[in-house]
View 1: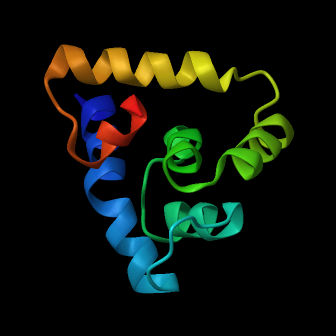
View 2: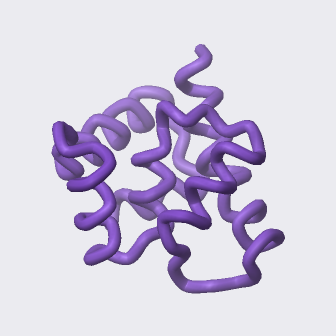
Length: 98
């Protein structure tokens, strides 16, 4: 239950928090996402999800390789998509299907 709640919070509340703190942007940088996750009480376990949602592809690959070298972003994305489809929740996370 806590995993679903944490993921759902990323899908529903991270974008509005980023916009409130940094203005409306197409993409945010890793430090903006990281700071928002830690300062606004998001579960940092799912920080890669925040990166996946709000960083451009080049920045995402660079940050993931530095901060989470053992993580395969493709497998992580598929794991989150599978988890969400089992629970019939998408919200903003529907972007993962793109």
